[in-house]
Image (cartoon, rainbow, N blue to C red):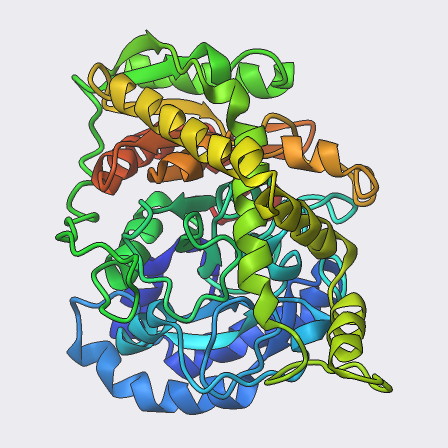
Length: 490
């Protein structure tokens, strides 16, 4: 019986032993989507014909490339990543019908590894949101409880993996958009160091913050996928030419001697007590496994939300200026002149949240306000990054909640932008500092998952993967997940 939640190694073994074929995996994925997605609504579109054709092509590589775990295995792509010949909308009406002529580097590398694209998954429009309710098409639901949000903006990616529709998916993370939905959906979400994975082919939201990463069922799976997509790409000027570590080899199952930092700023005010208790249990477990817990201070973190919501919207207002109805995407009818066409196209094509952030960013960059807002935000960003670097002189990783709250009901905060912005209070500082971080499930409270966030130093994904994997092997979550889904524990 095929079960995507059992992990990539189990699927590879079944393929190599001839128990299943890539065609079987594709059919299982499409069937599961057909059976479940009317409720979950993770997928914007499936590419069944393309997937079935590709399954035929990669069949021969499954047995000849034993070193490649991803060969013959399906995956999903967040719909802000381009794939040649496949519609890419960013869950926005303004890009409806857009067919890109190129493939994002991360997706191209998965294809090179023998992966099979099943389809594109939902997101908050242009990745602006924390609930996947801001999509122009429909809201995605949490597989653990369909009346609740899956998080965002990569809610479609996390929900598709949690529901067993695909073994893994790619998401993007600008202020927590991989880690927070991974936390809400009880899966693993990895945000690499800024520049570790090429952003070529990713439709930009905030260029200095965006990063592509995997959402998976286990830490080992995250290490496998990261190994495939990481590395220098000359087509992305922000991609770092830094050697890629052996991420899978780093999974030693041992944290003895590692120093784990715990910051009061990430465990205090604003953190739901139920979440804090779950994370504290995880910290205690890591300590019992031989890690040393070190209290640290990150004094400027209280300014992170304000800093982010000046920098990210400012970059968004610039990046989204290209969507004007001239070259591609939606164009408003009955415009009298060029200015009218611009105005009507953008008014009708963008949703409310995107418009809100464009207005915020344009204001912050406007004459007379640039120094007061955007420039000061950049200065504060530097101080936040310095706080982290000073902490890493004393610790190897920092642990914290991924989200300050449990998943909440659909519609509960949809009319409250400030509440939605505060949901990312634990994740945004990591993006501002450009650091790697992973969310790993640590508990189930009132039937809803809680995520533990492990934050590493620049380009030290290997250490956070090591800590996360060790925790996962001793965590009670596997049994809790098995009780929920049945037979899916690692």
